[in-house]
Length: 201
Image 1 (cartoon, helix red, strand yellow):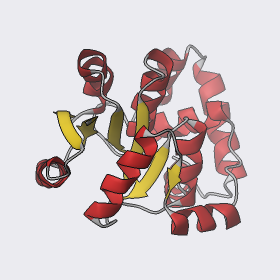
Image 2 (spheres, one colour; image 1 turned 60 degrees about the vertical axis):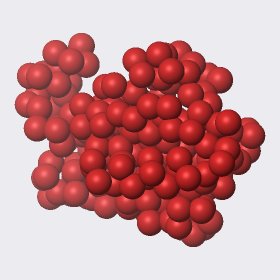
Image 3 (cartoon, rainbow, N blue to C red; image 1 turned 30 degrees about the vertical axis):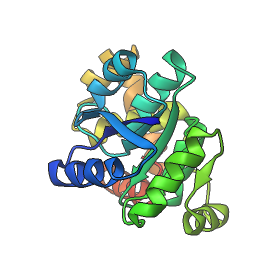
Image 4 (cartoon, rainbow, N blue to C red; image 1 turned 180 degrees about the vertical axis):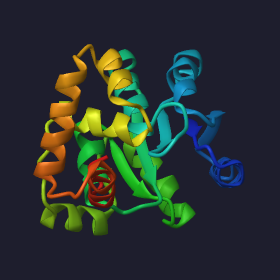
């Protein structure tokens, strides 16, 4: 049996996925969580073969949680689910060492097959998304700039970001100015919109 942990914050979606996966003769959902912060503790507790993780989760996003799993429990395979087929999200998932990446609207049989492939150590990527990622632009932002923009998008002020990232407030403001210039944005709100639409956030 392939032991699966499912991380999805929408209760109805999670319930449907659990029910569908448990119909498969060789797959068993051994744990389900609704928050990104619960992923690593639950994975350490139940040790699933595959963690199926929604990219957008409260508390901690799916890719951050995936990185924590990869660092602490590298034997666990990870499959990212997303409702938005943005090429930037695929790039971020692959750089975070996701074993698979699938759109939420894929047929249930495709999800079950993806879990089997990922459990066997094969990489699974939605074919349409792979093609669009091939053609899409790389993010012009550095990892530090991306983190500043992500925290800004979460509503944090410069002083909070400075404290969290161990930077001066002036340095954070310089980062924000650089981000706006790099993205040809009108302001920080526009920069967040541009980065989200490209899948860089």
